Amino acid sequence: MTSMLGNLARSRRTGGMAGITSVCSAHPIVIRAALRQAVGCDGPVLIEATCNQVNQFGGYTGLKPRDFVALVEQIADQERLPRDKVILGGDHLGPNPWREEPADVAMAKAEDMIAAYVEAGFCKLHLDTSMGCAGEPVALDDATTAERAVRLAAVAERCAASSGGERPVYVIGTEVPPPGGADHLITTLEPTHVDAARKTIALHRTQFHEAGLARAFDRVLALVVQPGVEFGNENVIVYDRAKAQALSALLDEEPALVYEAHSTDFQGVEALRQLVEDGFAILKVGPELTFALREALYGLDLIASDSIPGYPSRNLMAVMDGLMRENPGHWKGHYHGSRAKRHTLRHYSYSDRIRYYWNHPAAEAATFRLIKALDGRIIPAPLFRQHMPIFARYAGKPLEPQELLIDAVRAVLDGYQSAHRPDRLPRACSQG
Image (cartoon, rainbow, N blue to C red; front, side, top):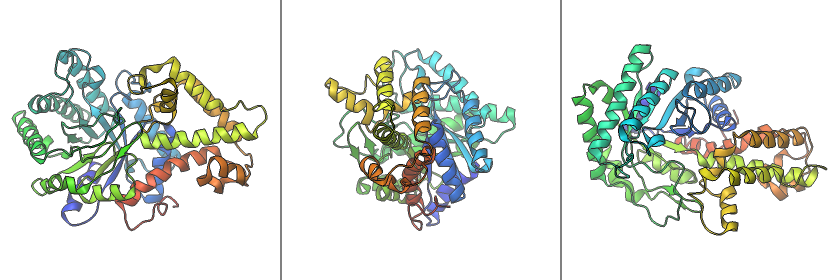
């Protein structure tokens, strides 16, 4: 499986256009949409879990690494996608979930997390040790970051060797955008300076070699840098390739590497295509996928409210708003302003922090009620045009809400597939 990723740099050197979408989500519908698309496109598919989402303590999803793998494999089997087409990655693996604790405690937990990921079968590991822990600067210097990354890589290598599994590939990098996007209005954004990127590579290479992990460094396939893309609560900074040409040229000095671009959500097909052409071969997307899912769920909620006697008006939205107000930890520090402003952001922000609440039992129950209420109903075209015009093709026949939701997520993934494969139109491969 890791050889599929290794081909990214090789393809770029030979003049081909190669990239892969990194689907960063634990939502079952998002995972199913990604796996189903891979069936139609003949794979492979890269699914990633983040350190806050999935870890040895369960993360905010309640899933440990083995649980996440079991979930993905179960859906892959249902979708008839061979398991060898699925690449599993771990994102932002490091002390981030425990950064309020002393560094020695946080790093010990990070080592245990890395071990749990490798033992569960994850083969692509993003080593993110750039954040300071208790009593440390918010952002650490490159040398400390590299030293801690090597510590985690050493654990991963030992675990892979003892289990007899495939040796992992690594992603390194100290200039890592915040997971899930920024929480403030962004007006300008500069790409990583090429000298900083060059220094990061050199420091990691040196420390890997000094630790006796030269062969592990040979499996470092990508560097995380800031290409100049980001999204906030209400705006998106779109890729300006002219500003990133020095970074792109650095890959000529490092022919075994590509870049991994985080926060590529909401960029649009043309910007994504340019990113891939310029060496940002791994495009990570997450919030845009659950944003599209939420859009579709809320559209169905409006249709049910307008057409089904006894269905409470905007029931799903009311349940989600109640959950978020009762449990504000995932959004309170990110959404600001008046009461009305915060209400709008809770539901419609690009950062989509509502995604942290979909696995709550109340949210699952409300979603199930909505799907059950609409399942098999024939919705007239004018009602679809009012609330979900892009899905009007579902009108006039028995509705399958689950299929519509998958379709909504796949519409985003189609844009990424089109960026990787310009010879295919956005829906060409997903039509199977």
